[in-house]
Amino acid sequence: MVNNGQSTIDNHEDTTRNGTRMKFIMLFSSLPFLTSFLQPQFEVNNLAWLAGCWEGTYSNGRIVSEQWMKPLGNVMMGMSRTVSNGKTVAFENVRLEQSEDGAISYIANPSGQEEAAFRLVELDGTRAVFENPGHDYPQRIIYELVSPDSLSARIEGTIDGKIKGSGFPYRRVKCD
Image 1 (cartoon, rainbow, N blue to C red):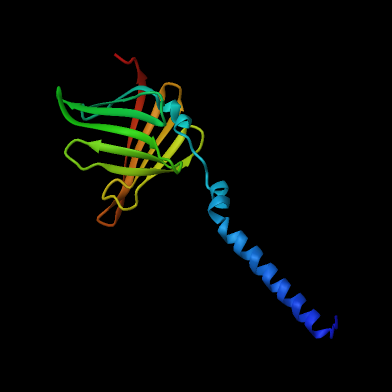
Image 2 (image 1 turned 45 degrees about the horizontal axis):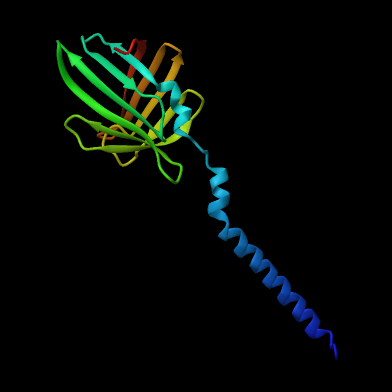
């Protein structure tokens, strides 16, 4: 076997290039796997602090009640009712649902409106932020457990180019 030196160098360079190319291909083919570690992993069970019955009474005489079932089967079911002057003026059925890809969505069915889904984008202990930038209003729904008997809910978004928001403080009440 004759080695002229040139072919050895060319072979080495080819192997290095191919080896680098192979490492590059292996790295990028594993990105979905790697990014799953970089993205926060949430579970519906992490939202169990929301379970129970909550009520807010507001200066305009409205009473808003929310009731959340404990997580089971990767879903939490919730409902709300708004009463003003003794009449129900609004209601909503909600589910916090975890899909197969691990994403959790707040899926709302409000009275008189189409269903809307908001993805959980932040979960920090007892504070959860759900977003849907494409929704008309709100684009964000935020829940925070202030204390074991106090819950804060907030909706936020843009209307006519202006940022708007409404807060709903609740106290824990007995589930009847």
